[in-house]
Image (cartoon, rainbow, N blue to C red):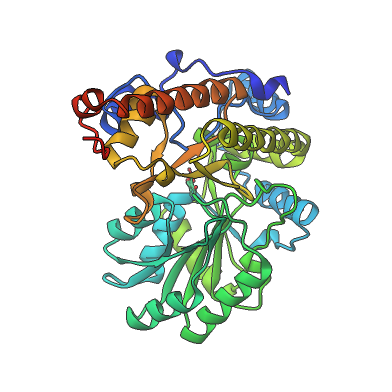
Length: 410
Ligand SMILES: Cc1ncc(COP(=O)(O)O)c(C=O)c1O
């Protein structure tokens, strides 16, 4: 438990999430605690550190590429942990998950093609599609007040109207924390089959699954136009700056075509640090991961109970997986500016603005909870105090008007 409760000292590090210029550009202040990047503060599992130390102590860095060892470790891991049968011969290693999707889009779609994503969507999907010169086609999820559902009819209509031949499916879903059920996935696949849509299935959060839910890979369905990003040492074991991406498909034609392309660009090598650390993680990191999952679920419980008591207007979407929590602040009846003022400036919480994930989410925010409970408790206490203070202030006309708020008393 101690491994998860100790806080990082960002001051000594140049982590992206705490870079002053990044914070300034997003929050207009550097004085926020960074909850916006989906990485983690936890010390990695001991076997990973041991393996990295072994390589450093060896002090010799001859060419050494062992991607097959990683594929075998991944294949064993998915069989043991998720009952999933992945052939170690069907993986292609790429420099990262996002580079993997970027390569897939360029190889299997044409310029100007529509690529469907389910919004609110992990913001990099739209960036990847746009930067590849393709068109983003949004399929908004339905928020039923408790959780998000796929709008199957709406999605099919978009595919027809926009002549979509490719979708990026996020499973489990960032930012809503939904772990899609086999029935939901079946329906997505049926629609894809009807319209011959290639599914790029981003399954990087597959190991962060909470009690009562289980991960279902799209690769386990009878549809050959599925190509998955699966097996994420970054998300599962906190190896964000030292990991690769893994592309998997059961379709030999897609596999050969993609592998040939990646190999031709010499993008498949990886490096010894990431290779040995990844093998150690998937072979020996299971217990550490179990501990982290318990810690994360306790954190969600703490946040939920705290919000019920102190911020009942805040809607906390219960994540079924991922370490992202999606919040709806609409119940507070703040304008977008007021919300930013309270969350960023007063509570000093660097949450990810909902607008990043799709235009329909301005009063929503995402929080990465993979940090110590102390940090979380401190931030939520500050948030509750800031909201109380703001509401009290709004009852006094002068305070309200002076702060530029748009409360009815003005
Ligand atoms: C759904 C999803 N895909 C891809 C990524 C990026 O993964 P990586 O940093 O391993 O490329 C993230 C990171 O947050 C993510 O949430």
